[in-house]
Length: 188
Image (cartoon, rainbow, N blue to C red; front, side, top):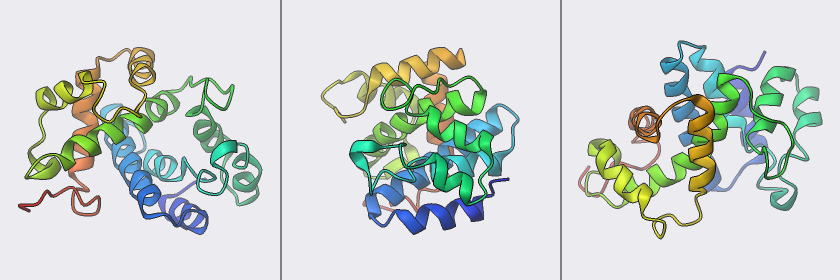
């Protein structure tokens, strides 16, 4: 069974790039908040979130093609591996997200990027970021343009949730890790 400690050990053995480690931490925080929302196992969802881009740094053009076998061999359970593979659905895998955990990972992976970008624009970082302000940035397609908004909205639809509600959960989860994510702003 995947634990957060195991996830960090495995991910950090493959991922050295600071921005990718920060992304892993952001997705971990968001997944913890999503788990709380759905009354699920917070640590497990966080572990999956932290490990989701396990092979990305070494194989960016073959993302998730070098994930399943090594993680299974390392003792990660099949359910967690399937969840990790599902976040690439329609992009680099054919593993469709079906569980709440899978749908959440699919949705928050890209969403955390826009949240981070929005927080970096603010004097107090993420600490005072509110949903209405975030949604303005989300609607501006030129802002954090590389983040796939249609994919995020598709994920929200799969979860049966509005982007505002998912954003509120993700922002709240990331606020808990504002210091570690360097999102305290220039006044903090």
